[in-house]
Image (cartoon, rainbow, N blue to C red; front, top):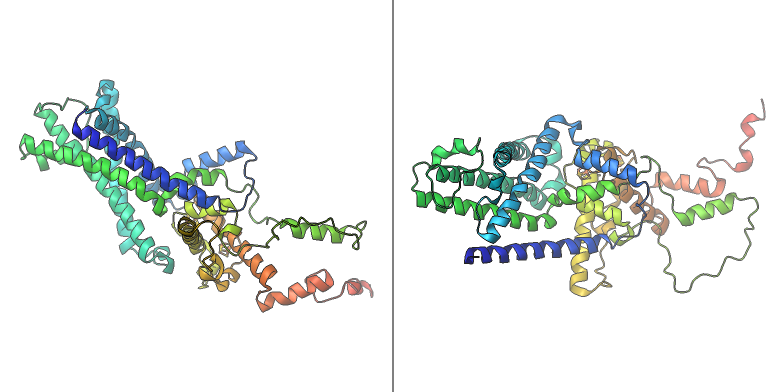
Length: 441
Ligand code: SF4
Ligand code: SF4
């Protein structure tokens, strides 16, 4: 093992360790949320994950963007099988260790090259479309500064990685043709052989330097990119799978009730219940239950996983009737705000310990009441999301907090609340008058 291999091994271990550390922080942050049981109906969950996350079934509802995305996704995943060979070569100082596979190896390298070209092409199209196009969802207020840069960084890095891969192969191909030491004849190069004329004038030493440079650039780039994922929206390539697996199986439109309120209503409706009965003694150590959510810790862990899984694609926002009619609400912003706040809470815990209160909250400091009350609860955002994220659950929980903890609701609703309380119905008529309409029949 030479010095270069030792350096490579150290970089590899450091990159793997840093990535594991960052993922552990994200896991810790997600588990700050309340508990919710999503372990039931495993068969349906596996089927949903296969269809939606692996099969990208929701992406193709917009065919052009969907197919390009699938190209990038499939290409990137499959090409990275080659990383396995790069890692083994890097550690043991070998070159194209899997060349013994013969014709199958040629097939693999040839397929990787075609996919790499398609990924590169799709990334260039996406970059132009995102920056020079007129698609409204890419121009929204929540998609300026860092989110915009993040999306561009991802595309540029993927372009550079694919170019490094292809130019590395182009020089390798030439070195194989020239019979250079160490460069065994292996692989098929349907794309990079077309690039070879660009390098043909170089000396053999120059080609070796370029090939090694591209090799190091490619693998270091991949390791850096791996560590970029946890701070980027691109983390969805990892979380999309568990996120879809644990998505709610309840039919869209069916709300989850709050247990405490359900119990109260059941008691009210039960003719055998004694309203004056002494309630069971309360646990003096129990933390009083909060209605709804004010901050990220009041949401459940799946809401928080949703926030880390959001790709910021804006399909939810472009389907949202409130957003379409010019209201302040954007379901994508709800998810981005939730993630930003959760990251802030995580940083506070790292710095000051888990009981630190910075006096801020998701509701008010990130998401405003006006946004929440613009929601029609239509579920279009939930339906549109390619990774089964549910912004509506967060909106409803924040609203519940406003109404039930702070008695804050739009005046239009206050009348209805009073009627429910006084009359047991949303209408302004006492229960005793309900059958009056039938008196003259
Ligand atoms: S449920 Fe609310 S946020 Fe989602 S699309 Fe409908 S109005 Fe928009
Ligand atoms: S919630 Fe889903 S649809 Fe909306 S931006 Fe995020 S990934 Fe896209």
